[in-house]
Image (cartoon, rainbow, N blue to C red; front, side, top):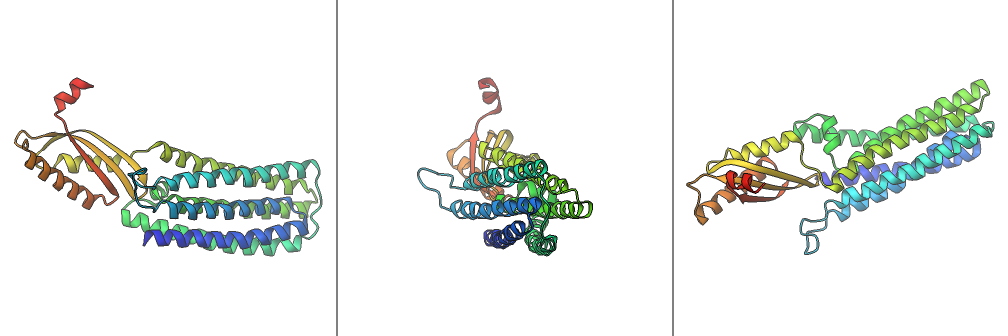
Length: 310
């Protein structure tokens, strides 16, 4: 269900962005508005990004194999990182370049009456896509019992990217509308170029934020501290475990986590059968309490031995 919902969210965003990009390009060429052309570049970049995100969703679902024993979940972060680069190069790069050119050589806006209907329709389409992403994030946050802000940080990369892109798109449309209006009202067409540069800076912020988050996941990021604390308490509270000496976690995907726990066993749990039974119980309890844990490895090591070797 979550995977299908993420697919639908990305498909809706891609369809909306493609239609909007075509409308913005036509209106931008007819009116000569640099801000509108900057928004067109933004929508083209977003459309390309939806292709990256769909690729990420489908490739990350490939089953584990001999070369990738923990699966392909991290492909989501790689393709999402490419989407961030696309926003930076295609969106921000074009917007800032065109804005500077427009300021150095300002041109009057030829047909402002074409611009406002396109901006209004774009806002409607972008708003519907943004609303779907936010509804999904709110539902997932409610199910996880966390705030939507925290869910945005932990969410499926594709849905997070759509939410950030659409938020930037809505703000960018407002900036374009202000720039065009000021240029028409004052006759100072520098406002149009300034709006284009502002849109470019906005896209740079979005690209940096998404790129930073995906880089952290590709390098290998642990679960949040409170989740690690819960895992440690659950494992350490199991009868037969004296202490959790070390707990290592690695997030392979939003719903796929690797956990390695070094535990000090109770002196009574020394036989092979007892250790095996204890490991099965911990594995069962952890997966029930934390469904995202796909791989759990227990390393029975006495605490004093661990301390001597460190």
